[in-house]
Image 1 (cartoon, rainbow, N blue to C red):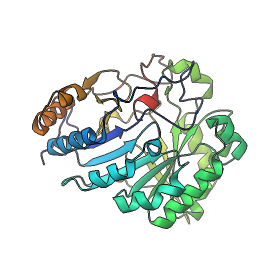
Image 2: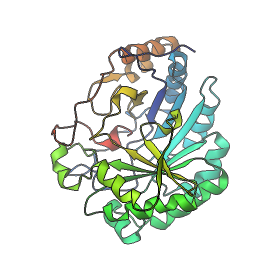
Image 3: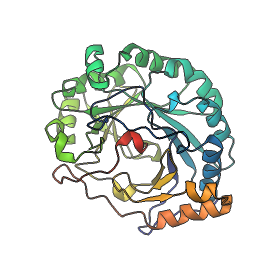
Length: 330
């Protein structure tokens, strides 16, 4: 397996794959004004196409894959897809991001299929607030799913919490306290413009990381962790006496572009080199035209060469993003 090095010296070894644009929740900060537009079935990559693309990616230098959506667990047959992906020689890590609604049912099959890391999106510990944020009455399902995933053997279980002023910023301390009881990685995330709207459309909800850190420090003595590859973009800490970790992900106030190691594959087969750039490379078209695995690997190499050094989005800079997060794969 070769190395994928971009024009800025970054080692690109991580591919996030959206297998569907469908989601069973309707989180207000993710859903575009006017609602979602669903892709047709013929637009979405078939599983055999995903497999061929991943085989090409591994040849090019990708060693880690994360399955995302939408919500990946709503797509039929995805456990078998994970099983086939896990069998690809050279793929070292297979992970999943989910909203957790179906995690109770699918934790054991996913683990047996070869998935070892799970990120669960959970923005509140309060059932009524969960309904307000997501439009769904599934809070108990998510908590049961996290408990089941822990029992099955997933480690670490990462809980991703988007912090929003006046919505859930009063729960930061409660989320942080979970790490005294459980070996979870609780990661607080700055709100990003994820619904295809300009960043100023949600400006009043934005909570900067410095404010999050102040609240977390009120819970106990916080110690900074030494950086490891498994932490990804998060700055990780732990409490003295805690068994889990607390992390902070700061896409808006403190870019981590200099350490970005990822590409994204959208559900309809577009390679995206930066979450906040609408420049995409259509890999589905050559695939369906009969391109070989080696030719697809070359597309990955070309994509890496045009990966931007950084994005220019900040909390104070208002730009219109062409896609909502559910259509990108996060």
